[in-house]
Amino acid sequence: MTSPLLGQLIEALRCLPGVGPKSAQRMAFHLLERNRVGAVHLAQVLQESMRAIGHCVRCRTFTENELCGLCASLRRDPSVLCIVEHPQDVLAVEQATGFRGLYFVLHGHLSPIDGIGPEDLGLHDLLPRLQRDAVREIILATNVTIEGETTAHFISELVRSHGIPVTRIAHGVPVGGELEFIDAGTLARAFQGRHSV
Image (tube, rainbow, N blue to C red; front, top):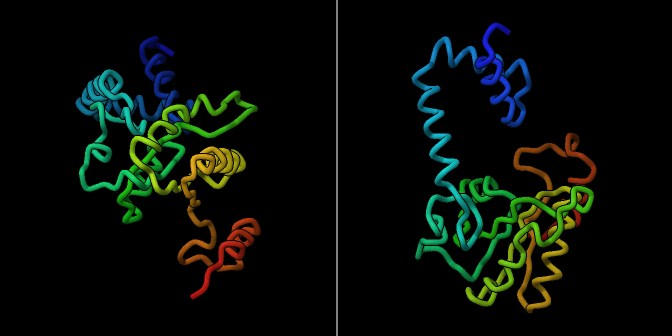
């Protein structure tokens, strides 16, 4: 490569998920050839975001304030708490449902193989919150993976010992899904979670 700085730019872009050497090269050349103004703006916003965005002291999602907008809202019900693995899960629930409670973001899931235990998920912050906010229901919305299920089970045992009801979001056949194309695990779960109509 003729330009060491161009090589550094390509390598820096590879830190993004799913971006390999060719994609990073394509992005770098696009920014340099066609959108230098956009690249400068991106760099400024990235730098400011890395400096200013931290975690909400209540739910642990990303925010540049002490409390995120959801936790600061008086229109939310603090007695219903939805526990999710990642901040993007909060956005997914907000965009797809009418949920009006609050959240607790784990920033991961239990994974002994990766050395991630309960202390790494901020669960020490969860227990005081249960009493402080007089939580009357916990909704577990962790991913439907082995780690997500293990995390949900661990949290449910922890919370039940405090006498708080725990529910788990339903899993099953997606809207518009055809049974012949649904995997066996999803179909089995749908049958286990069936309800009267």
